[in-house]
Image 1: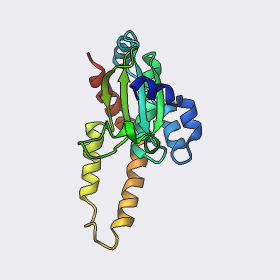
Image 2: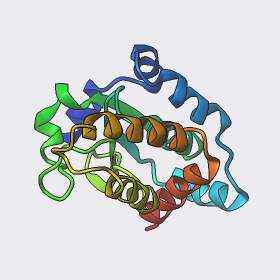
Image 3: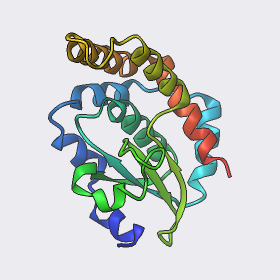
Length: 184
């Protein structure tokens, strides 16, 4: 399938948001509370001139998506860019073309395409600052064979999701990372 076909297959943001059952509240909080700087707005006005669109590989259960999807949706709205959302596990043929480090089906992945449906840029699954946060938190976990590993890992991811979906300084790292990626 062409990227154009994948785009046509995708849901709108509202369709995706209304279908959510796990992280809808967190995604909505980020979406509604996100604020752009004047510099952000200038960058996004330049992006708007390019007539790009985007394909988003995501899933409701993903904490990173609860952060990145609303940030990118707001960027897209400000940049006059339409995004279409595909659920990762229902679209593995596309997902497997965008593996993180060549092996991981990490999401969300944002594939920016031009008016002809050609790939221009890809961003995701997270900003480098958020990646460092995850690595630091994982380093504090006990060994995988430890009896309390699962419980501690579950708590770590719960706290991580709460931090990234409620802290505007974390949101700023995503905005800056995406701005860097969208520069021509």
